[in-house]
Image (cartoon, rainbow over all chains, first blue to last red):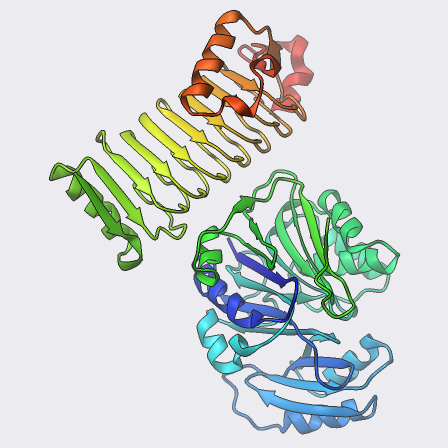
Length: 314
Length: 233
């Protein structure tokens, strides 16, 4: 059992972090090993936001991580901002090169250093434990943005640590993230196929393969919706997953409809969560909801021209 | 006598204990305010009391019900009315998966859509869905009746032993050994009466309904039907 949640505002940016934290605090009933969010905002400067996980909480601060990582990043492009909060160094920079090259260079700065997200909009923050302590450290509830995903994990397959927590970045594709509830039983087979094609996996978590599979399909020219449609038969096992890109959000549910997802859509927003009770923590009024059907794939796309108020749903 | 409980101020256990105390003290109608899709509201009620959920309920609302009449004014989560013996549950909007799972008696009515595995292992009673139902509705049904005014998704009535499913809309795919049976005058009368009783007559013309039942091929193992068994297992 895990909990997943997603939100997209159709017309204007909102405190998406606040909505997600409220839902995740409730979904911690479905999993409390770790909690994470993928937030999509717009940085005021720079064209790339990088979130780097630097060290486990328990270790004492002995390395000036922010300075070290900033210095490496500076060799690739102009760093406009850098900060260190909790286990993360956050960079805002100008960069037009290959994302994998930059990620590997940053990760070479020390043991356990891992790039958790890259993109113009995407910021992934995840931490062991529950939503509220995470919010207390990272101030997620003050984050303004258009859309985002969240996850609460009850680990069943792979290691219980921050790297194996959700959301997963579809490395090295910028701005794509995924959260998943369930098990991908043909994980090793799919992973092998994608690795042969040159994709790199950061963890041993089966959910990571969804992100890489979708990104790979999109790289070959598929739309997000097409890639997700294909995934319903390509992925084996039980799953309901949510995926987000720079301007889209969507969900897919397996052929047997084993893992729950409740969907609420109004003129203003699309909100999804494993249980309606979680939606109600963020929206304290009656919602017209429906459970997603087995095999169902839906995506919503924000028209890119700065919120003209048009959202294309499929 | 009518009583109200504000769910926002109590734990689920307190709410359910209060319901039982109110019933013991002679209340006949209990309103649950601010349910906010909470799970397990009003489970195991064994008295002919009316319970009005003033909003959406979470999982297993009215589960194990024996005699009570529930009116859920919003949506319901998984397993509404699961294992009900007698009584009535009406959901005004949509219900999620496992609606009326394993009921032995009573009636579950969903005015909107219902999710996957509606009426799974139904052993009696009546389930009425005003809209569509999801994957594997009526899976391993053993007795009772289901009326679906809208469309039914794949695997309808898969491996059902007995019982009857009426579908007014499209059937995406019949499950293993679920067969279409001939509608009789008696079926028409029953449908007209049941839908009128719940004010659902406008959802679908009676003449559109199809009747699904068990083909009986899975009742006894037969080598001749090996392929059917292989798929069903």
